[in-house]
Length: 292
Image 1 (cartoon, rainbow, N blue to C red):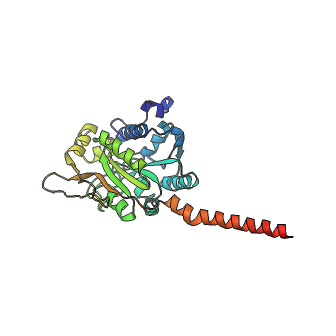
Image 2 (cartoon, rainbow, N blue to C red; image 1 turned 30 degrees about the vertical axis):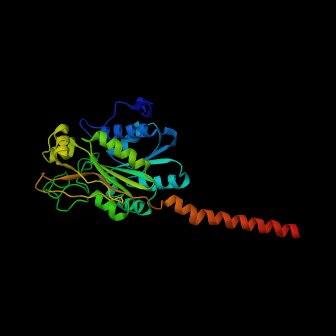
Image 3 (spheres, rainbow, N blue to C red; image 1 turned 45 degrees about the vertical axis):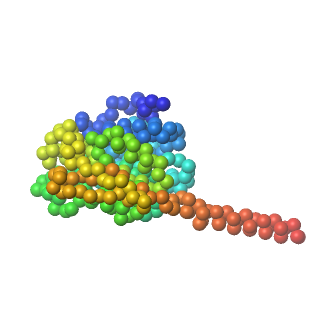
């Protein structure tokens, strides 16, 4: 099946800015879906608000364009009702980690089986280039004309502390690796977080003298440092020589653990006992009626 079969071609061409990396991410996601042989009728994608959310207009699957920061909450409801479906949640860095931060950490804590793609361009691109939770300290945005004065979130470390069982980071430069990682994340039976560093030459790049889209992607290439292989516990070794590369960006799979998934645990602990109790009650009532 061709990747284009997963697209709503009637909505093309897309409306992302020239040079935006989000189209690369969408292409990698569709490649992963094609590799896994998933039926698009079995895929649900939920988004919040922002540049990242436009992806749902182009992907021919079941899609929900929801509220800012609430995509994971909607996706959780879908997964609880239909655990057989594949749920993917593309979000921007602000959508995921600012207004949606509480949903993010609790989805990770529950280890519910869905894939969260954090499309991190270090800015609020749709609303004018404000600084976001991942904008580096001292970097510029429309709401930080003199540079930000707060430290950014590290998405990987945040996901790790919150308990996500699959955690990875890649960049738009590493498009083929991204497709492989996304396929691995979708297959993983738990909450998967894939952070993708993506370029926004329109706002972040221009305000921070990062150059055009090509130069920003070359920056990802030059700073990327692969993490080590996973150990027996499913954790990667991250050893980086800060002298070897300027502003190193660790990329790869940081964690891949198999542990209790929320929908399965809920079914065993809540639904099945409730169904057994209801059946026992019905049988007792039937027996009592027969005795009369």
